[in-house]
Image 1 (tube, rainbow, N blue to C red):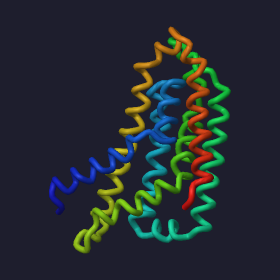
Image 2: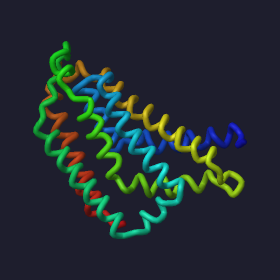
Image 3: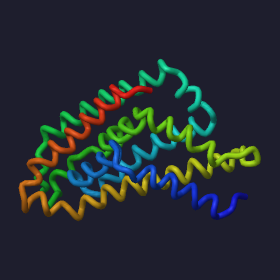
Image 4: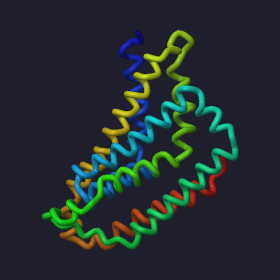
Length: 208
């Protein structure tokens, strides 16, 4: 059994990599603002499910195959880029005036929709698969090449991914009041939408 220091290093590495703002985290913040932290659990679960699938593919060695396949990599990359741009356009057109009561808007939101949006954003990001494929070998030696070790690595990845998403969703609670007291709500959708469009274009134009 690996030492506590080993798993602490793994947890810190994955947490730092996961908490850095990216498409999934921006989506968690957006859903937290629009629909509340409770509904954003579906968003976190969508991202976590995609991360588990990507982590499992990577840890079993298929990640190396996919990331060395130019055709597969490009297909995933362009699907992800187009979806980010699509979400960006939607967000750009959406004013963020948050109802403090929230009851009517929150009850109407589909948790399946939130889950699907988050899952697609995470699953269609090939850079995550590349990252996992590069990360996991650093924490696997010949003596650690076993099912229990792989399972624990992916399980910790899932827990960390969920926590990071919820941190962003919950942080939205603390800035909600600013949107109704100021004109920030008029610009937040445009700013986040522009970021998503920029991320999508950057992903599409980036070299492998």
